[in-house]
Length: 355
Image 1 (spheres, rainbow, N blue to C red):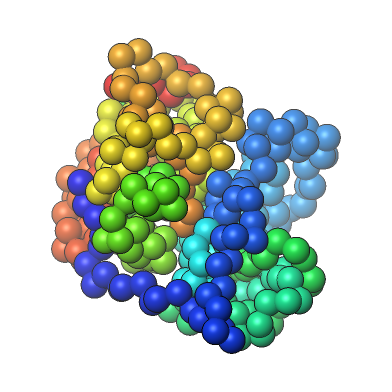
Image 2: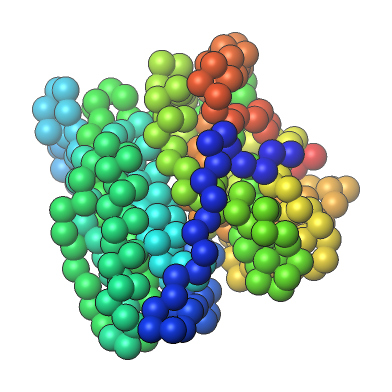
């Protein structure tokens, strides 16, 4: 198990304003990608929408992916996404950085590069303006680190804080990565370890060390841009990022939309996660993800399934590419000191199998 990437950034202490600590998580019932709408209900909702058709709309709702893609010309297409959620940590700057990372990573998951972002913010008026300023400033830093610019946004009053970004990026029309094109014979890889949701829940119950908590935060503020750059020369068959539906939920999406069977035989975990799962801790996204993505998992320990269904925030890329490229891909990631683990394979059939 690996606890954090190289160059780990230590979390700043909780921000204090006017003599009191601003506990952002105390203002919400659930934060991060665990706050996502149920995937089952979302699928039912989208059945009522007629997919928009357009010659230059390369990716829309038929099928839906991590972002929409619109072709400008033979060399350029726009990648457009939006993502926001309530706080999952108390420190405002850390919250802004995580939320920005999560939104920006959708562009990387499509093979694109961020260009421009706008803030989407909802905060109680009673919060000190310094709190909002810290969120915005940290998000702006993360957008610049991705290669883009934070150029404005929209803020409303709301009892529950929420923050995120609308992001526009660019991609070559022939270099788009879809989640619906995995092929039998592919190898599956993951570029971040799992368990951020469980670790945050365990830390709130004082079951997790500060080091494990800091490691989770560091992974959630690690952009997928480096992984995308390393992956691009290998022309993967399918890519998505692992977020609120958990590894098994996003594997289910990839399998169903690609018309294949995905076999998961490894689930790399952050330090202390399995102990949290064995203690019976679960996040709000766990039951919704199990409903959405049933898997064949005879004999698999419950703590492993809890890890697979754990809602991730700003998780890694799930990559499907021809197995004969696997060793070269791993070597390329090692050369850049980037994390990657082989987690399974793609076969003829349907559904997801865990062993």
